[in-house]
Image 1: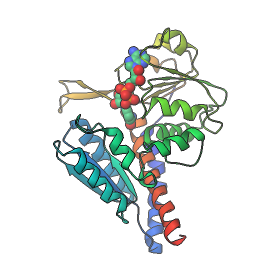
Image 2: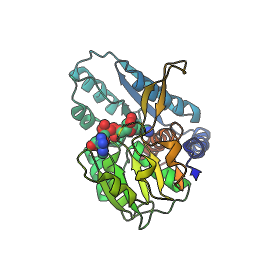
Image 3: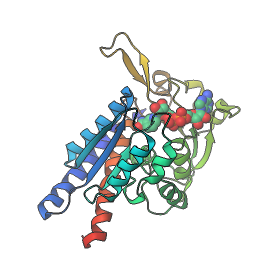
Image 4: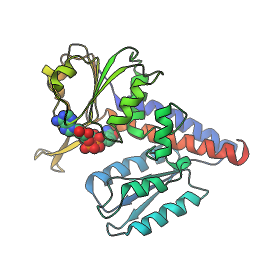
Length: 297
Ligand code: NAD
């Protein structure tokens, strides 16, 4: 079994971006600038957004963290995004989800200018992704593709089973793995909470993407020998042995599955760091596209 080390693979991407930013600085070109919006103070969201901002700092991007009260009205949040859409210095806009219940996530996502939608959640960008056109692929599925690429995992002709059909992970990765591209060309089965015979389906999989948010769900008896296992799950579980009182668990029973698969992502240190690297790549791309429109750079 080989570990698909997301820390290592994401570092290679960040090093590459860092040298590109250095070049931009030397040329006097505009540096990528990400605006990250955090509404309220949900513990997990705080952690995720902090690592995104840290990622920007590490490679020399500008970043602006906008903290907004849990009680902000939908109208005021829409107004904040509207201003960022028109702010020429901002290349990418990210709104950390989930949002408080009184705010429609759909309305917020739909207002983000597609050219600044570095999370790839806007319907225009999702539509382009489905068509296979150039776009911003949402960060977690993009991160998974980058990880498969980094480790040169053959996907062509493989049966990929995706567990979970959310708009941000399961559904997009199922589409991306089925496209005629590299990585891609898989035969994909998309499973969800109403899937019957999940174990039998998983046993036929060459690649399993577990994205359901249930710690340790994928057991060794659901996995065929030498399968490739991508664990997207991140769940905080109480752990008195830890200083902060919790540990992070993935959707895969790592201890037992790792003894029979060919490749597996650890949690933490697998898909998580790749998600950040993918977001940074999208932000860089947004910056370059904008600059090429502004002055042909
Ligand atoms: P979600 O809660 O939106 O969707 C879960 C999906 O799992 C649903 O489609 C549901 O049908 C399916 N499901 C639930 N129980 C099932 C079962 N018993 N059998 C089969 N399918 C089942 O989840 P999400 O937002 O896609 O997140 C999934 C997990 O991935 C969570 O742990 C989340 O924290 C994590 N996540 C990680 C990253 C990262 O960067 N690593 C990014 C996003 C989400």
